[in-house]
Image 1: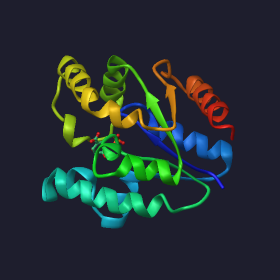
Image 2: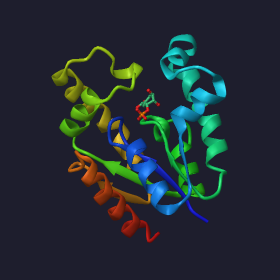
Image 3: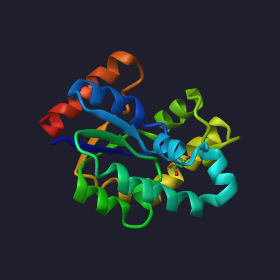
Image 4: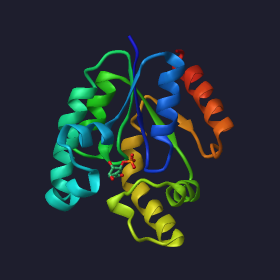
Length: 175
Ligand code: S3P
C-alpha cells in the first residue's frame, strides 16, 4: 500500500511534484487545498475571509483526517498544515512523509510566477515576500523537518527537472 504525503512551504512545488509522482506510481493524487474547496464548495481565500485563519485550520485538519485514510495515494498538503494541532505527528503515523525543501529566493520566485491566490502573501513585493518567507520558515521548518524524508527541490525550475525530482523521490522512498 502506498500512502505518501508531501509537506513544505507554499511554492515548493508540492502539487506539481505530487501529481507527477502519483502518475508515475499509478496511484491517485489529492491536493488537500482542492479537497477542502470541493467539500465546502468554497475557494480558500473565501474560507479565510469568512472564517478567519483559525476556522480554515479546523476544516483543514478535518479534511486531512479524511484523505490520510485513503490507500494508494499521494497527497500534497497546504504549507501550513504540518504546523497546526498535532497534524505533523498524525501524518507521520499515517504515511511516508516528505519535506520538499527549497531556498527562500526560489520559493519567492515560484510564488510570483504562480497563479494560485494565497491569502497569507497577497499584495507583497518580491523583496517583502522573501523576507516574510525567511521569517516564517524559522517557525515552520521545525515542523517540516519532522517529515520522515527530506528532498531538496531548489533546483527544480522547469519541467525536465520535475521529472528528475520525481525520480529522486522514488529513490528516496524506494517506490
Ligand atoms: C497556506 C498554504 C496554502 C493554503 C493556504 C495557507 C499556508 O497551500 O493552504 O493559503 O499557511 O502556508 P499551498 O502551500 O498549497 O499554497
